[in-house]
Every structure is written in C-alpha cells, then in structure tokens.
Image (cartoon, rainbow, N blue to C red; front, top):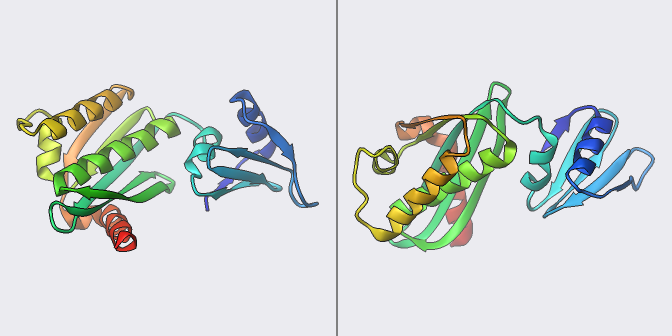
Length: 198
C-alpha cells in the first residue's frame, strides 16, 4: 500500500487535471478520496494512501515526474517452458519507489525475462522518469536488446521490438547485465509470483 507524503491540495489538483474525479472523504480524518483504474487514493493531513489491486494507476499521477531511476527485472519458468512469473523493482535515491510481480501463465525462461523487462519499462514510463539504468541477470536478454546477440526466435524478436519502443520514450537509458545477487529483490518477486501460481 503506497504512502505518498505531499501537499494533498496539490495532489488533488494533479488528479483533477488528469481527469480523475475527486470526492469528499468518508470520515473526519479523510480530506478527499479518488478512484482511478484499479486503485483508490485517500488523502489525510500530509499524505495520500493508495489502496487496491493496481496502485500504480494513481501513484504515477501523484508522484513528481522526471528524474532518474534504477530498474531491476527478472523472470523465470519452472519447466522451461512451464508456469512462469515476473518481478520488477524501481529504485531512486529515496529507495524502492515501486515493485510488482505477476504470474504470466506458461512460458520459457527467456519469454518470462522479456515480459519482466517490458512490465518494468511500462511502470517506469507511467511514473514519468526521464532516465533509466536498467539491470537484469539474463545476459542473453541484455545482449539481445543491446544488439550484441541476434534474436532468432520470432516471439523473442517481437518482444525485443516492444522493449525498443518503450526505451525510445526515455531521454537516456542504459541496460546492464548483473549477477543474480544484485538482482535479488526482482528475483524474489518473480519466485513469489510462481509460488502463488502453483
């Protein structure tokens, strides 16, 4: 449940400017509340608490856009192909800004890695970051995206195109292969998604 410390009247204006309907709070402590996508934002004295299944829908509108973020992604399949899950984390100087995990059905390890990268980039785009430093522990995916390896599989080629389309939305980006221990939070999230799916 994300908590955003902010001027709640500025936050209200930001939501209204984005076309989100803001209503009165339900209690004396609530300043206002707003629902958008799969989430509800509730404003208190100096903070907004976001609840619901898709907090990113509102959180992206409420956080200040721009700036640089570090993005970690991981995907995996049990059986290759088999049940697959993804995980991603967005980190700034303030710490973890957002993270997500999801079971994606049956896939190969490489398909899951690409799906994790796509989900992470979509989240970073929605949060409005200008610069990204992306890290993953799949050397194959990193080198395919950077153009150092060919992508022979048609489905992976299509996913690589999607990744490049998303990367074009940022002013600057870098993609780096890192050891699994550096990517441990995204790895744990991908495994959580797999555990829930089975």
